[in-house]
Image 1 (cartoon, rainbow, N blue to C red):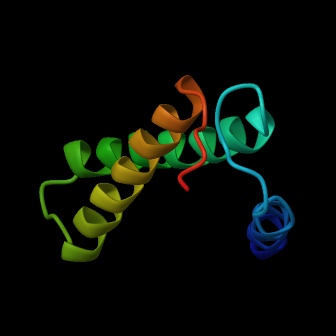
Image 2 (cartoon, rainbow, N blue to C red):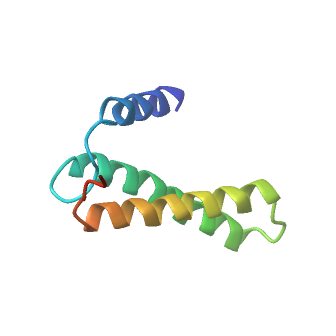
Image 3 (cartoon, rainbow, N blue to C red):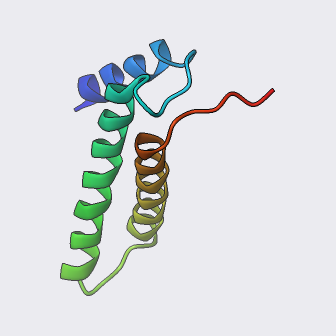
Length: 83
């Protein structure tokens, strides 16, 4: 699992120059969206099944959900350079 996160981090680090969104760097946006979207769904399932909610799981669910929404937005829109 650590190797997966390291590879994922290197993918994002190497693609940090261009803007993400539209047709540019769409694989990066899809990969990030899938990671955070599926992670958020798994954490929501954990929260719904377990009656005792740990604060760390709730915080992680919120963070993963927010990043999932951001990357879904980046996937669906075209980038614009702010000057």
